[in-house]
Length: 97
Image (cartoon, rainbow, N blue to C red):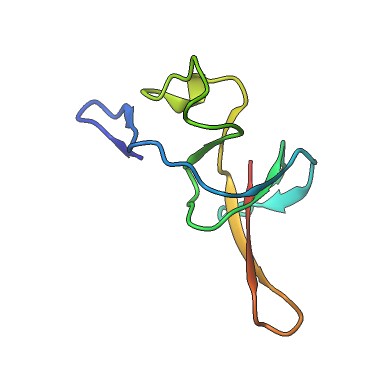
């Protein structure tokens, strides 16, 4: 995501990602030390704060890809964290929506 000459958000092409979507509420802290409660927690690699995640596929009819936040169930990534397993062999990436 970026902005145009007028400060309005612009969006990159939509990409499907494999993930594990959990609709649970979990308390987290943003990079600005703000405590929030998530609407969902998604285990996914390769996203950043400000990206938009939507549960479903790009083939779902009726998706507005020009402004992803206008879709029902689309939420912005508010925080992104990584957690290694106990042996530090696998790292899990959590996106807080």
